[in-house]
Length: 104
Image (cartoon, rainbow, N blue to C red):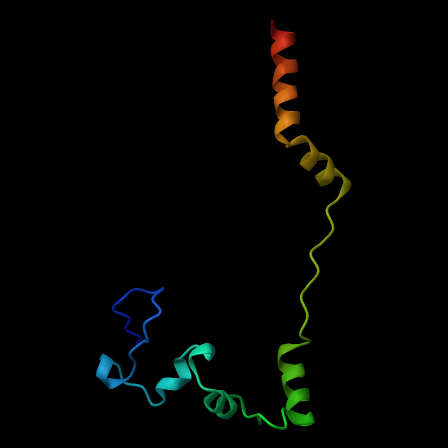
């Protein structure tokens, strides 16, 4: 387990392994990628800093994870656009004034 005496959002280094009370075979494998050296990341991801990924490794990752692109959010329907227009502050204020003038 990771032990961080200063809280979860601390910038202090985390203590791992037996000294922290846990048993880990490879303490760097659970560290955040930004806390590891480039050489550690190179070994963990099976790549080379000078040559990059091999074609076969790139194909394997593409098959496993899919393309590196974000999904496009669905377009709002006309009904949703109409409802979103009605929720503006000024529109709600005008609707309340209209209801108040009808009641009075």
